[in-house]
Amino acid sequence: MKVALMAGGTGGTKLAHGFSMLDDVELSVIVNVADDLELHGLHVSPDIDAVLYTLAGLIDSQRGWGVANDTYTAHAMFARYGEPIWFTLGDADLATHATRTRLLSEGTSLTDATASMAAALGLRSRILPATDDRCRTVILTDDGPLEFQEYFVRHRQEPEVRGVRIDGIDDARPTPSVIAAIRQADLLVIGPSNPVVSIGPMLALPGMREAILGVPRRVGVSPIIGGQALKGPAARMLDSLGHEVSAAGVARIYGDLLSHWVVDMTDAELAPRIGAMGVEPILLDAIMRTDADRARLAGELIGIG
Amino acid sequence: MKVALMAGGTGGTKLAHGFSMLDDVELSVIVNVADDLELHGLHVSPDIDAVLYTLAGLIDSQRGWGVANDTYTAHAMFARYGEPIWFTLGDADLATHATRTRLLSEGTSLTDATASMAAALGLRSRILPATDDRCRTVILTDDGPLEFQEYFVRHRQEPEVRGVRIDGIDDARPTPSVIAAIRQADLLVIGPSNPVVSIGPMLALPGMREAILGVPRRVGVSPIIGGQALKGPAARMLDSLGHEVSAAGVARIYGDLLSHWVVDMTDAELAPRIGAMGVEPILLDAIMRTDADRARLAGELIGIG
Image (cartoon, rainbow over all chains, first blue to last red; front, side, top):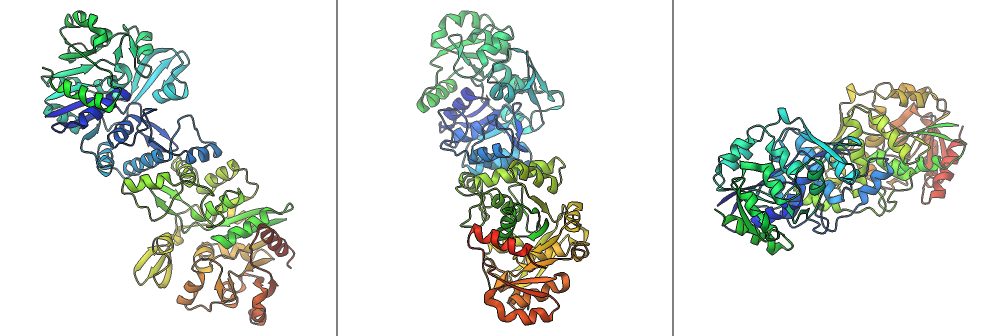
């Protein structure tokens, strides 16, 4: 069974891990790269790395990013050189960014660089950057426009969000690998990731929505449970941008792009409103506390439809 | 008093440290960059780094290279990615290479990148790459041509040396800063570094010898003491290339480029032969075991002539 999962951030990454644990699933994870950044001249792809590290069993699961038991010796040396250190790079992490940057500088695409690194880490699943073209999410705040990681990490999500812009999106295209993975998918899943800054930039790629609509089973998992995001700035960002902060509010953002919308049991009362949007509501235990939860939820998604 | 010291490798670096400890000395260290290399897409300048780390008090003095108490987490991750790991990069070291590479990629010259990093580390002395142009020492061995660090580190100086070639030397030039530092120098010193692969590539730069000959006091320190190199492959390399492995043999390589040639007391019997070359022999305790030895030897060199 072929699954194409769109992911960015912690929730989507956990679900990717869940699918990767299922024997009969051929998984392609389509990953947001609009919050990539350059640091110390290196290309950092936080969402790709979270998926790489999680599937390889290397992730620092407490934090949800970076490599477990990493050291921070380079970070301290960067500080001595007066380099920006608001984005903490572990030493193992730095090897990831240097390896990727070397491959890119040699003309390798981000897709091929990611495939080569995933293979080196022994991964079975395919990890596909949504695009090989440069596009960057810019958060429009009361403090002015901020690149996503500047908003998210450097400013700790404190500035009020007034809008979101994706620089370069008009000239960006989904990769042929992404389009092929979606076309061949038996099941397309939009993970419980931030709809505005994690999933949004992927859906904004020309041709992406059309490809998705070609898959009969298109299942989304709500990143909002009981009116709250489990992690990250999704709830406050949705509110600032005028969306209803609920599983129903996020369902409305995706609209008929999805055939099914998974909400946590605690949000059962939203089911009629979701159904009225023409999307079939599915009630599940959508919180992934343990590795077993991840595999269980992934298995339940496969059973839908 | 202005001192221009030409250095590459351990001996020259120790002597640079010695001069840097003298209050009344304005030191410019002219550093070999012909054994630079690229690793993981990063520009590594081993000789510049040895000088930077030594003058900043960061050097791993046991090994003579790298940062003391460095960690090797990135190294282990590079291994996972199948990256070449024959040249061990510590994590702090990696921050140095990444910072330098970023500056170079932004169009900063190696000279300016080095100056900016030296300033960040609080150094008072000037560290000047001999050239901003790419030139690379290639060791011609029975196993074929090897870039210097490949010969030195990867092949542990085992292959027999048949010759040395410096790729790119015809198009390389000493930097204006180097020429100015030599022209303004009250004393020019050639450190106790390998004459073939550390000093040789600097002297081969067009215009370098002429600039040096303009300095009245030109003092060299023998890297060979009692027929042996204190560290590194100099002795065996000199032998393979048909040179006499002695302080007199190295004096002959430099010829009239120098006005004075410092040999260790243990080599006193070579003094007449060196004098016969038209170079004034100076007998000193030339072995730098401690930091105090370094400052003492530097002070004695200032007193020459």
